[in-house]
Image (cartoon, rainbow, N blue to C red; front, top):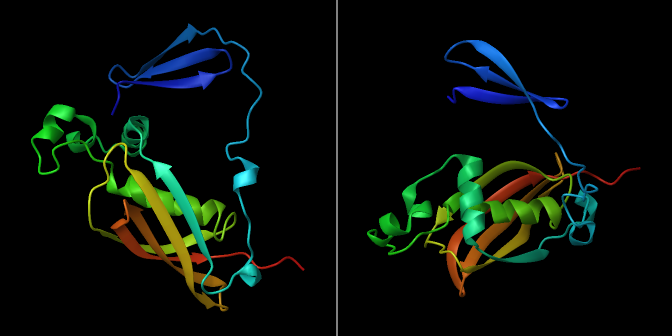
Length: 184
């Protein structure tokens, strides 16, 4: 646990020192922020209801894995395994270089489910993942998600999910999501 935890309070930052169990305040200077941008480009989002879906529908996402993606995922997840972050360490492994987190690759499936097929409103019920090969920094990952079953009770959708690099499957699995129905 960190010894100091910043808590933003207006224009003041309160630092709580857990070791000495006391607070101290410091003034901060803020600059006007740029107007907020939507977190997701609405042109890249497609919202489908359960009634819009059909078996065989597919969506594809291609993403180049960047060094900044791997570092950001490590910071977000807390997975600081040196196989992902340290060139020297990774060079001595069977992979010979740094590799992306497996769940980073899996998160690209989540990106498709949440923004394209079925899209906003879809909620994960379950996901199976089978890892077949590493994904390296600079690889272009192609994620393919396909509807394989529609279950009217509970508006559940079963989808086959796979990620490929250079035409080779690096990850596959199956997702089950709940999808909103059409508004009446």
